Length: 263
Image (cartoon, rainbow, N blue to C red):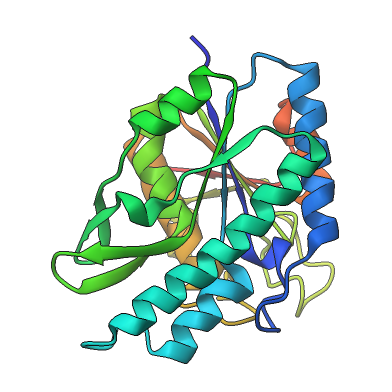
């Protein structure tokens, strides 16, 4: 049985997070072309695609006061912005020949105190069985404790990976992995081939937040969530790569690109 690959396109990669509602369509077309070529060369590849909300959902959440008591219009506006970016991603992937089908997380997600506790998985399994590429994305969700919350793609992947039997997660970032220092502030900083929970706890690695608006904690929160998932499921290969390393990462080329996150 094939084990699906969960692949996330970071919001900072596919949008300009320093400018509201600004997509990067050429980057999306480039990614879609790479994924189409990989699937053509490896027809057995099962792929679940995810993407961040970038300068769409994050800006809408901040502008509308998401999470404040009684601000239900902000729930609607933030969800609409996230869906707008997803529509663009979906259309550009289809244009490139990638048979994607969008599955909106907020339609079934249920959260408790900011954590995802339930999500419809069967539609994703069914889409995979028909050779389709299901897309999920960072979205709003109803929350039993907080009334409303935002589910990041990392939260969705952490829920889906064990239920789908995935053995790999690739997070495609605007930088090529985790560095010893922020490469945008310290050009030439060392790229880490591996990062563990213990190494992160000891310090010496600078993982910042986002360089634009991000209401979910930026790269630091994403790395911590994925390291927690690696502790729970040690068989999972979780790797952060840049766009330049995506082709090699898809086929598990050696030396492996990017940074592997280990328990």
